[in-house]
Length: 329
Ligand code: CO
Ligand code: ZN
Image (cartoon, rainbow, N blue to C red; front, side, top):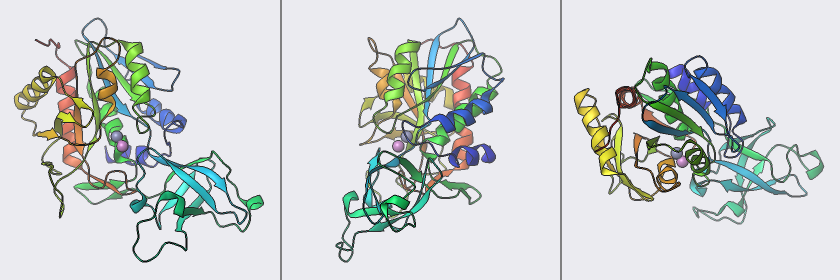
């Protein structure tokens, strides 16, 4: 599965520009789904099974990125963020544009000492001396460039958020030889700019229940507070985040499946942030939802770290949830 994770995280697809990652995922699940389609917002929808409870499982395939706001006369590229781009993660970083152009992020000379500058005090240097020679223009998009790193039990890459969720969904679909349910695996678009792909795909599918698979934060490095989550302690079953209260019936269903199958899990109470499940919950006249989270250190930096055993246990849990008939009380 490490190879699959590397393949997914090596692909560049910021929000709104998911063509490349969609092609990769489509080729990985070809032959495992009963039916595949792409909707108007670019969501890749793969159905497995027919006739049982309609379940939607969402993993977002977009990643945070940068968009050019203008190029100055010296050829320095000014930019804004696509999704939650934190200034402190940027200086010295490298980026790659969709047309292959690469560059490094520099700081305006007016930034003094250790001040944390805003994005408008940064620029991308693509190695040219004037605007005419600059290979990118206003509106072009880029993503972090950082190679995948295998530390044994822990894996590090850009866009673990949420290619790791995509990897879990791909593996679960492959492992799900048969199911009593009608399962829709949705590889969603534009999550990082506000769970937009999940909203339209959930409307179209009209599921009876669902959950997202996404990363969450971590509490197990120096100075972290108010978050009881550690890498290697199992996937997390979300109880709430900043935008959603999981349906308690979904939480109970997930916990029962984990305990029955002896899969380690953690209980997640996240104060900020949210996932595709929020959009699913509020679509049409409302849908019972929850979320399975992969604890991830350094989220939204170019080096996001996950624990490989957590990922494998997440695949087991998702498969255990989807195989037998689902009946919520
Ligand atoms: Co994110
Ligand atoms: Zn995410």
